[in-house]
Image (cartoon, rainbow, N blue to C red):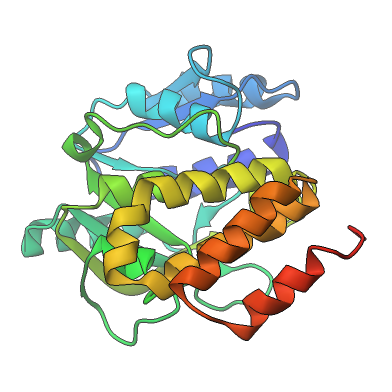
Length: 279
């Protein structure tokens, strides 16, 4: 959480109301300057399984703050929940943990419902099924998923705290060799608002460019072999944000990288866009 005291209680109450007994709630605060700490202390006094820790170890931002939470986990499983989201029914965790045990899984995924249109965030699946990390990486499945994964998967992996957002790349690394089942069930609400990290992409294009460069670096070998067309799209997006951050040399480089992997008319158009004024 960070400076979202106005959402925090609804989020915490939705977790506390879950009909699953073996739980610890770790609130990792990225040094908020609103009344977040005051709210958290009320929960600490009332519930013994709630912990409150400030991010003093990692760089400030969504990725470093998540690392701080992971470092403090003592349970066997990890689920990461943002402060502006909440569970929409109270048997979500029980249902997902039953799936893990019954199917002997390393990780289980479920969908979010978007607050702006009421639709499930998961695109690409029409029935519950086993999936692999490449299904998301190569674009067969798209959208945000609520995920519970075994803690051991995180033993040597943390988010890159130099990035603002871009957590998906690390999530792929964590789940690379995991047995994953996607339930398709919608368990939580994804709140869409102007303060979402994804909405800030255009206002901080240099940061968004770093996210794409990190994704390409970490997944290049797998994607070039298994889904070069999707890799070409990453390069095209990187070129777009390179232009917006006035890094034209990188922009042209990434366009030609994209075209070398897959010829697309929209990528050729992007080449001409590079010459247009930023506005």
